[in-house]
Image 1: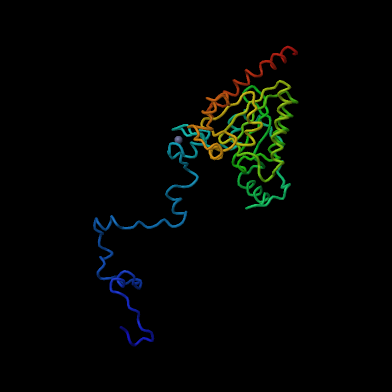
Image 2: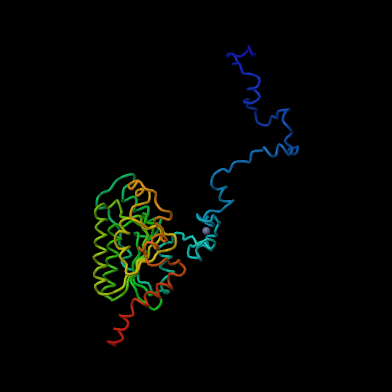
Length: 332
Ligand SMILES: [Zn+2]
């Protein structure tokens, strides 16, 4: 005990001193093995590996943005190969979500796509504020996705057929249907009706856009009314459902196609399975709300893998536009 100091030294048990005493840097405990002697086998087994500090170290091991793990078969897929394969796992054929622009590129003939209303943007009509304001959400999504809204519309050539094409993008606010999605689709449908063109809408959506309240729900009736005029002109409409496709979109234009196609494994429904389970208090059948389940139950007409989509669409359009082609030939 050091009596010379102004404060009495507290009692520390011998064991605790050996464990907790902090040694000044550079001082080695003689009981410790010399640092320069090679560790024994037992020591190596218990040596704690240095912790990875920060994300930079992790990046060096598995560079981000180069590899993607397939959620179905857990294979690590090289991003460039995944992109070249239209975002489909080449091991298990899992269909990853794909951006609207990439999808359009995979379907239309080069340089044939004329985009419509590319600059149309949503406005915050309700002054919506929640965890984040609608204005902030829009601004961050414009920046993040490089898209103006959740759908791209235009007229392009698919094989020999000119067709109105509307493609949704889930990365923009969950592909939610607001006034802009509805308006862009209606303009596309009306233009196609005017020009006697078939329509293909490829949808993926979480449903109506909550930030726009009733205005988003109105888009359901608006798009269906435009499609009714298109159908009255006896023009074909092909709806393609991709993962996920839910709620307001599924309850309106996505489910009224003359032909309804879906990508393999896509989740399609109105309310989510948890809500249905809670409401009905019944166990849901296996595969509930998948494209395969819905094909068995007659809601959709065919499941088409992404890589076959273009060829299949051309085939269906050949068949569905026979009458138009015949009447055009007769008047010529
Ligand atoms: Zn896979």
